[in-house]
Length: 462
Image (cartoon, rainbow, N blue to C red):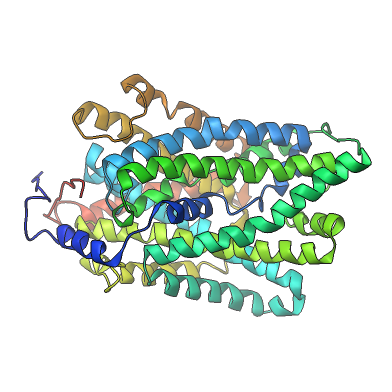
């Protein structure tokens, strides 16, 4: 494989883009933290099914333990690799550099195919909460129309560049978190003032606990998404580790404090399901807080979609720069945004809006889990193959780096085992996910093998 030194080549297009980014400005630490927060969490919306399936005591235990087994290993891995290889494309670049073009292509394919299942969820969340203001707004074709508008607006917003998306995430964070701060304070006040009995226990079924763990994994995944825009982040060597730590803390607190407050307030968990935050807010704080919680739910769907557009659209661009996709995906506008990739990905997600993917967490977990395992393998392989690579942030020695992915791997296996009976019509959801994953090698040999693309670039940090 031919290797090029991207720093010494004066004609290197990546070097020119780096100069332009310096003129246009980059995403700083706080916008990066806010964008990462929305790529992973977007508030406590979505954890209601954990409570309904497990009850307060077990739900809080799951949400307390999950960051250490699932989030923290991923955040540490991202902190090391994003600071060592701060280029656009993130995890695709890491895997390609560690294991070659074939596995890099599989990483890109798994992530992009997972995005089709994942990205249909967030416009649906926006529309669901919008309908709580007035059901007539989302009746009939209005549901699809509003979802399509979310895709269009977020696509246009992303054409303005990563800093714009990051600053928007900061504003969304404040607007989204404010109702939960009020609800949490009211919940604790209600419980302590009225001496309400705390329903920590409850009846748990095996299916309910399995669902709770799956939903918790889904709500805590996505830390690596922030890495795909590393080339557009200011001082990524230092800001990525900091962003991972702060985001992990914010996400955990966002989930745990409201749940503890509801337990102290004596709210029964028996029928708690998606969307019930609005009812609880109206019960404890009145109609105004209920409306604020509805608005926060809409912001949750919009903000998460907007942040993830930023992440996913850098993958086709990076793959095109390596000759694995047509070069048109690498075209950038004057704000240094891969506008063709943004528009085509937006069109693909818009086409998927009418499909019932919002319940297919197991498919998302299969595809995301496979890509995540490749990233952990890349972490260990790069330690062996490139021991002298400059690593501003390092996760322990080689043994620690090699074992970091064990807990996430065990959780993925558990999630797959728990979802083994889930079907889409008459087709097994896991079989469908496996079929999508196995398309990757076929597509590689059809579109990106050396027979078709002779160019092979080994990236170096900018």
